[in-house]
Length: 403
Ligand SMILES: *[C@@H]1O[C@H](CO)[C@@H](O)[C@H](O)[C@H]1NC(C)=O
Ligand SMILES: *[C@@H]1O[C@H](CO)[C@@H](O)[C@H](O)[C@H]1NC(C)=O
Ligand SMILES: *[C@@H]1O[C@H](CO)[C@@H](O)[C@H](O)[C@H]1NC(C)=O
Ligand SMILES: *[C@@H]1O[C@H](CO)[C@@H](O)[C@H](O)[C@H]1NC(C)=O
Ligand SMILES: *[C@@H]1O[C@H](CO)[C@@H](O)[C@H](O)[C@H]1NC(C)=O
Image (cartoon, rainbow, N blue to C red; front, side):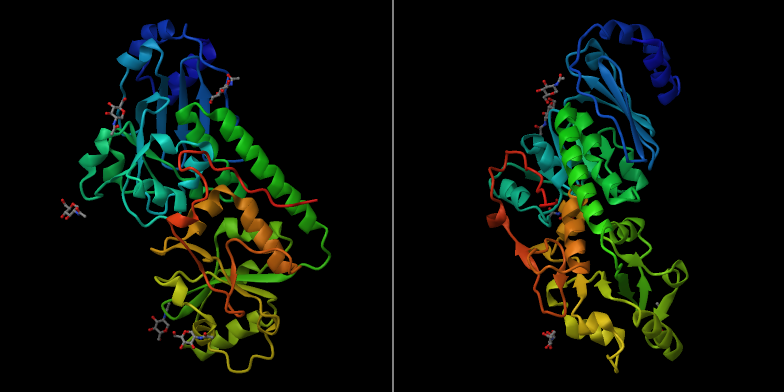
């Protein structure tokens, strides 16, 4: 093992591995393949490569994973499980997922479905995962009985409670912690590292990024920047989004976000003063995205939206006269799981293409994630019949035409 990797590993593992140093050097004679992922955009994880091992650091929760190649001597001898460092033998023999708000599409793009053996709920946006479950390939696990997860080499989950993270086979996967759409998509490399499929992860990210950047450049040439308000209604009050990735989407699509001074306030519709201010701001807005989270997106229509906005005189609002009020819940499962929290994270080029069509309508592009509320566009319910490939085959990313 090179002194550099030893130094990195030592610092990563806080000296815990020092006593095992001899064994690790021995194991280093095994040759592993040259698949390596370099992180270009994501800011919250890092990967280090040794000859027979890798270390991946998740800076969002401070956890590190020591990944040991199954064909190395170290694999049989080394087992770490401390609150901050866990070891895994890779490629992972099998794994399970806590599917609530988990972007399963990353696994589908990598072609890892054959090793997925358990899930925690049927409430999932992915038609092919539903089909896989229906075909009897997956165990349904009970979240209240975490010991059920221990039968798998790894159990993946997004943000979770502290108590859960103590289990030795838990891996947190948190692309949603990043600030831009591309940074979130690059987390495909994080999963690739666990399965030795760095080459595939690199290819997919490169394709997604180049398509995304092509779309950014095409939108940048537009002269007029429409003003976009991305809003949410909670407990009788409207607020504008502060989510960095949403603001970035609007910029990248060639739009303009509202001023920060507006963004930081909430507007209670039962206060006349608030309502007056809100209406004044909305008079400047060209496109409105209603991001209100509701239990039943299918029943949410323009009547409800206008009621929540409490508008009497509509003449001032160009998003109303131009029918440009949108929601990002067009794709959802029959159980109302939104694909916005799954497929949209791994393939941000599709979201960006939607937003460009919304801001600069051509009428010839059908949006994937956004539906036009004022035109009464309905949500598309996805079931297992919408899975149009063999469930074990990798999903290919969808490239948008861009010149
Ligand atoms: C990378 O891994 C893939 C399998 O995932 C393998 O087909 C390919 O040959 C490897 N590339 C290199 C450079 O070793
Ligand atoms: C997962 O893989 C491990 C290691 O090969 C094996 O011991 C275990 O039985 C497998 N679990 C399931 C549920 O297949
Ligand atoms: C899940 O486990 C809890 C606690 O053991 C139990 O009360 C519940 O009935 C189980 N749910 C299902 C669907 O089996
Ligand atoms: C808005 O005002 C109403 C009535 O005063 C109150 O019940 C509600 O909690 C307020 N909402 C927020 C988010 O402050
Ligand atoms: C919206 O839904 C409500 C309740 O189902 C219904 O009364 C109303 O007519 C609908 N509005 C539109 C524009 O379809």
